[in-house]
Figure 1 (cartoon, rainbow, N blue to C red):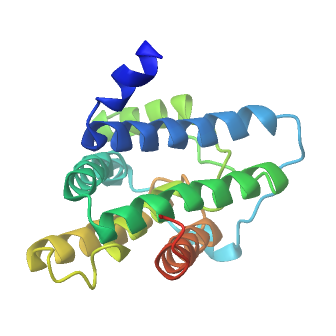
Figure 2 (figure 1 turned 180 degrees about the horizontal axis):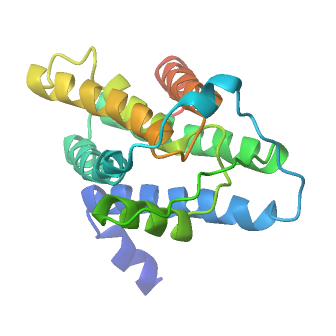
Length: 208
């Protein structure tokens, strides 16, 4: 009981971002572990093999965590209808992604990076710590797109922030391709996941 009372005193603005982070890692790492022995599908299309590896775009791929962190914290501080719908849509999108990760495991072939240089070293590090699984839908794309979708029609959000969030979302989607972390189907799946979950969160009062 003392633990519950202590937990209840923690501000929601602290709990929500941490809970979202925990749920994200649980879905991503858990699904990879549970599906590791399953057959993995490759959704690569001929056009995907023509997309070049552009190592410096890893700065966008990693930099998006700054947007995510600030957006999740800001939504937790707002604690209004839009914030509730955002966190609801975020939870549902991860749940939907978990279903795909388990029922339809995916994999892709990455290029071999041998050239020296800072950005190439960063790509090699990324490939080392992040295996080519849990690809469809792209969490990078769904989270970034949901950040923008949650405020694109919100007049209380600064117009510059709405444009910035859109620009970052588009850049992140592109970077998932140019770092060869995802294929086009993954990107489209991530965007569609964000759109569907945002509509569900707005229309079906699940956040109550």
